[in-house]
Structures are given as C-alpha cells and as structure tokens.
Length: 135
Image 1: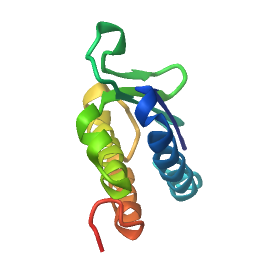
Image 2: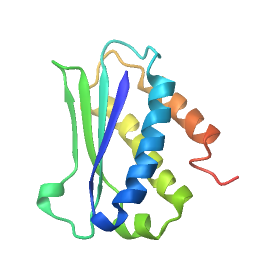
Image 3: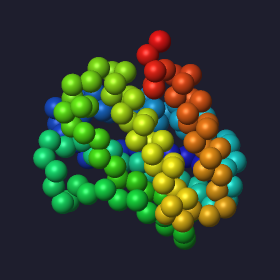
C-alpha cells in the first residue's frame, strides 16, 4: 500500500507544508509500502486543506472507492495554528490528521483491511521520528 499526499494550501504556508508533507509522505511510504494490511486497500490519498477562509469548494471529503481499492481524505488543518507553529508543531498537526483518517477507514466501509495495524505502524513511525512528542 502507498499513501499519496497533496494539499489545498494558502500561499504563505505552502513551502512549510510542502516540506513537512514530503518528509512525512516519504517516510510513511517506506514504512507501509511493503506491509500487507489486507486486500481491501491499495492506495490512501490524503489532501490537507490549510486555508485562511473556509470556502465550500475546499470541503472535507472521506470516501472509499471499492473498484480501485482507494480511500480519499480531504481534511482541514487550522490555518492560524499551522502558520504559528514551528516545524515540529506543523508535522504534528499533519500526522495527527493522518492518524484520524486511519481511524475513519472502517467507518467509511474499507473491507478486508487491518486498519488497526496501519494505525500502530504509523504511530510507531511518528514516535520514532519525533513527530508527536518533543524530545
């Protein structure tokens, strides 16, 4: 399985978000890419939304596409919280949102998939990379 990450982002935080997203996405794919979580999911898409103004065209989405065995999550991250955070805080916001999407997978109907194991693997990675707690 792989994660694909992108964003709907306010320009003034785009570079910081892209740097954090690249690091988190690359390391997550290294961790989960060869793991077998079951045949129900092959691709996990995450679109972070960090916008000053909440607009309908940037709404949250959570869906499972059975024919492709893909999930898509578009999740909002508070703009001011992200902008005012240091690099650690920005990564923490993204990772906490990723963890939330894994917890939602059974609720949106992803079958034959060990979401608990993915959650544990992601949490372990986040601890190893110090994305959730300062050292």
